[in-house]
Structure formats: structure tokens, C-alpha cells
Image (cartoon, rainbow, N blue to C red; front, side, top):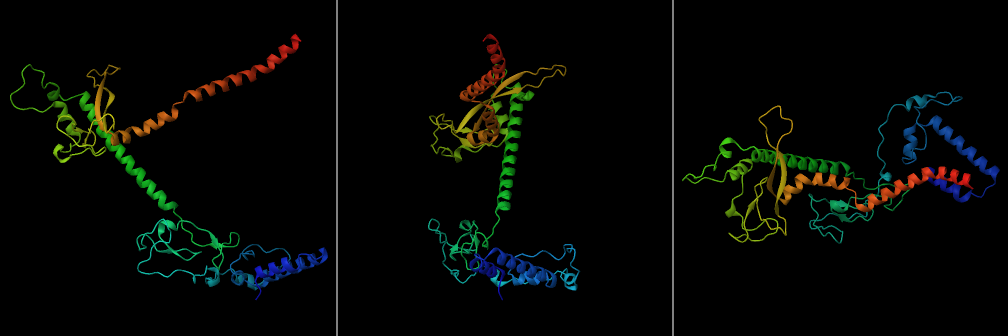
Length: 350
């Protein structure tokens, strides 16, 4: 049986130089054959014979005037299960067979192919690749050759849902981490700005008690988060410098409790100056007293808390060259507005 594709190629190759009259005859004949096919054959049968090319309209559409309804049109409305045609799929004879010690065919990869990292045949060359190197798709013909117009998608994989789920998980994790550190910072600053009565009165006398007492501020800071033991950490987790008892001391992050160094060159930890409003006993007082509080943070916690605010400030900040350009644009706009009046006055003087 001659397919529609073969018929079109025959017409293009052998009848493209016909006279206009003969071309019209061929076109009329072809239209008549299409009308007969629509009239007497169901849509499912035509699509199967034409190898899936949806050339004809559905019989569910309203019939054109002048063509009486036929019994075949009513029968075609019943959906028939369409069997997959083997010719529509890309051939697999050139596929590499799976073995026990297969590795990814990508030269820069070389991973061993297992069920965890993927075991996928390329639909074009047939070689085995891991899942990371089979993220692309292209249209192939049934003989596994590149056919961008009439080809079918050889290996369609949609990674949008995977990446969106991964992004949502990362964003939620970051949001929870920021919220947790912000709550700790708020609690710590409020305790330092408004210490409890027993802590605020400690050490106010001239004589210290004989029993050993801890630093009141240290007690407040350790009540927010548990500090890491000094003896268990020998090096800074960021710069990997070795601690000592006197020359290179240990410091604790007040938000996560990790032991870090205070080297100003590496900035593994630094004291951040914050302004906190002190609680006022007088309810009628409108302006609350503000005091400064220094809180030591490691660079990870500092970046987590202040990165969003720093990014917003960086966006709103305008460099000097941009401000100069905006001033020049305003001057140009003003000159253009005054130019018609200047030309009228100049014409009057002339």
C-alpha cells in the first residue's frame, strides 16, 4: 500500500513541472480522494494506515452541507483502542547490550553504571550512559537518524518537577534556618538589653562572694544555645588554624554555639553591633531607650541572617556613575521641554 508520504514525494519529484491545467487536475483528484476517505473510512483506520499522521479531521465535527450522514460516521464515534505500531518507535537493533561492568560512555565521566545512577541507552548512537548524561532530547526518525521536522522525540524526560521539588526543599530548609537563628538572636538581645533582676544586681557590691560565680553575661548567652566544649575542638572549623591557650584563643558563636577563632584576617567570627530597645516601665512613654549590644557570630550565621538584607541594600544602592547618568538624563529632559520656548523667543528676536 502506498503511504501518504510516498505519494507526496512522488508528486513533488515527478509532477512538479506539469502544466497548470494538469496540476489542477491532480489537485482535484487528490481532493476527491480525501473526501471519499473521510466519507467511507473511520478515523482510527486512516490514522493507522497513514502511520499516525493526523491528516484528516475527526468525524465528531459537524458534517459539511451537501454530504449526507453515513452509517460509518456514526460507528467511528465509538473510541477504539489503538494498538501501538512498531514502525512508530525508534529501532533498537543498534543498542549496546547491558553487562555487569558497564561504564558511562561519556569520556569525562567514567562512572560505573548501576541501577542507582541510571542505565540508559542513547536512542541515536545506542551507547550506554548514566542518568546525568542523558538529560537531552532530539527528534529522530524510525531509523534512529536526526529528523527535526518529521521525527519523533527519542527520549523525552522532564526534569522540571525534580528541580522544582529540590528548590522548594532547599528554600524551606533555608527559611527554617533563618527563622531559628533570628529567634535566638532576638531572645539573646532582649536578655542582654533587659537582664533579669538577679543578673542585673550581681556584682554590684564592693566585695565578691567567696563562692565561685560565673560571668552573668556568659550565663545569659549560654541559656540561649548550648556551647560546644572547648577541649573537643583543636582547630578552627573554617580556617583550620590550631588553637592555643593564650596566643590563639577560642571563641563561641552566640547563635550556633560552635567554637571558632577570632582572627580578623580570616573573619571566621566577628562581633556585630546591634541596637536594641530597652523595655520601659512607664507605659505612657512613647520613645523607648535604645542601647548598643555586641553579639559575636560565626560567618555562617552572620551570612544566613544578614544576606537577604545586604542583598536588598545592594540593589537599592546606586553607584556614583549611575547617579551622574540619571542627573544628565534629567537635564536632557528639562532642555527638551524648554527647547520650543527658546526657539519661539529666538525667532521673535530675529
